[in-house]
Structures are given as C-alpha cells and as structure tokens.
Length: 401
Image (cartoon, rainbow, N blue to C red; front, side):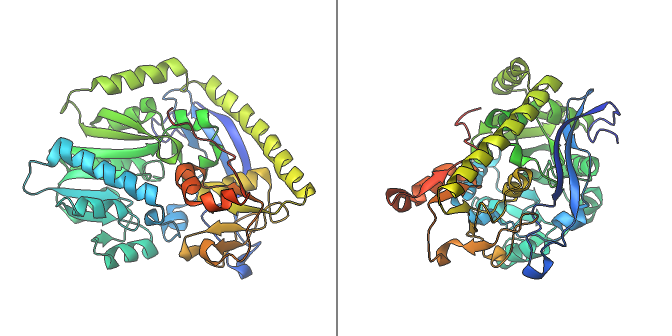
C-alpha cells in the first residue's frame, strides 16, 4: 500500500481493532450472521504523518445507500446553521448572487441553512435514500459520487464549496481535490469540516475509527493534501461538535493571508506531538486499557442485575461494541430516533434496535454510544435522571481540545 496523501510506502501499523463489519450495515433479522467482516487497522505515514486505514471497503458498498441522517440531531443542525451564518457574514454577505456546492450533502440539512441566506445551492450525495429525501425537501441534489468527472458534468464554478464530515471518507481523494480546485471561483472559499485527530486522541474516542473514515487528519496532514492540489488553508476554528472538529477555511494558494489564529493552532499542534508515531503508540495502549475498564463496568452491572440499554446507535458505536465484544448479553437494546433503523440489528454484535418513542420500559443504565451529543442528551433526559436512570458515557469529550 502507498500513503493515500503523499504516495509514500513508509507506513507503520499503529492500531489494530481486529476484523469488523462495515459499521453502517444495520441488519434485517434474516441477514444476521451473514454480514462480511474486514480488517480495521490504522497505519501511520512516516513521511507526511497522515494516519489512515490500510483496507478500503468500496465506496459503492458504504455510500451507495445508508441510514445516516444529518437532520435527526438538533445540535448538529444548529452547528450547520452557525457555520452558514459565519461563512456568509465573513465572505459573501455583500454579494447579490452567491452559490454553494455541498459535497456529501446527505439529507440537505446544511444546504437548507444556506438557502435561508439566499444562496443558490446544489448538493452531491451518493446515497439514494438520503438524496431522495433532500430533493423532496426542496434541496436540489445530484445522486452521484463527487469527483472530477462529476464536476465537469456540472459545468460551472461556485463561490463556496462545503464538505462536512466527508473529507476523510474519500476513496477518490485526489480526484475530489482536483474537482474543488477546478470548480472554485478565483476568490471562492472551500469550507472543510473534519474530525480532529488531536481531539480523538485526547478524548480517547477510538470509536471514530471505522471503515467509512479512511483518513484521520490533523492540521499538518490535511494542509499537505490541500497544498499538493494548489489549495491553501488560511483560517480554522476548533468546534466542540463530535467531540472536537476543525472547521477549516481554504482558498486557492496565495489568495488570502494566513490568519494569526491558524498560526497559533499550528503551533499548539506541534507542541502537543500529536503528529508523531509515539502519540499513536500511546493512543493504542490507552485503547486497550479502556476496553478492559468498560468490560469490568458492564459485567459488574449484569452481575448486580442491572438492565443496560445503549443510547443511540451511531456508526461509531459499532466500532466500540465489536472491539469490546459486547452483545445482547450485556446490552439488551440500542435505543434510536432514526426511523430508517426501525426493526434492525447492529452489525457484528446483533443487538436489536428499538425506537426511543416506543419504549415500554426503561433501563437502569443507558450506555451512551452517541456520546458526542452529551449536552443535548442530558438536557433532554432530566426526567429519567431524576428517576434514577444512570447515563454512562464511555467517552467523555472535553469542552476544548
């Protein structure tokens, strides 16, 4: 294998989470036990320092159709609203006409916020189900994989490109970068939103490693990718969403001055050592300890007769459940809001899903897999907490990273 970013062959394995199913492959009852498993391993590039998976589940399998919906969680929609408002006020508020293309636009949640600000919008979404939902909601969306060929077919340039939580998914990484370069107006802005590997390490959020996430970026590593294609990050902020995400502002190389804030973030990253192989070795050791601690907790709960449900069935939760080898013997149900997952079972561990608004009983403990929405979850469940239901967070994200 060669590095997905710089083509180097100097790659070292740093994390091995074993054989796992594609974690968005929620199962019908008749599919249980038939799901394929794939290696889930992280390699570290000695040359550009990018961490990445060494095995690719084909994009047509993972993204041709899936059940993830951006609009289910209020705090994510609010984050998208804030991003749209910030981008518009900083760069495009003075323009009479303005346009945005959203890569991996899902159900159109982000684009709806741009529509409300007067943008001409276009989504490009590979999932049939979610692109259909977006179009039905009045968000123009192409049901395609975004790459250079797709951009040529669109045949126009945009003031703004957005990629929220998709840039680490890309099998056709360099084709996508070339497409953005081609499709971005001379003074345009590309907003790239991605999980921050520094925060993943600090939060011990190893469950954010799964087959859909082919790469794990820091500022240093994503800038090396962008620079290779004539693009340059000129500003960035660290947001608390998903336990620590970067919202990066990118333009054509040399088009805008580098902000003092970005310079400070780069320096902070350098001081932390998060781009060294030693940081990954330490992360791997802490993951192993976390597994043992969580198994002790869950086994003790069972021994004491406690009923445990999983709160949420996020894709990342299946990485955790499969690595911990936790099934229905320790967690009876995964409780979900997303109606597309009604009646399904988790891949690998085969825990049944129940809809939150249809529960007839409550657990003694909610094991919170959707930990990245901790604030919202606790605020929405004060009545249950008052009744003595414990909400246990296996990952406790820091407010800042």
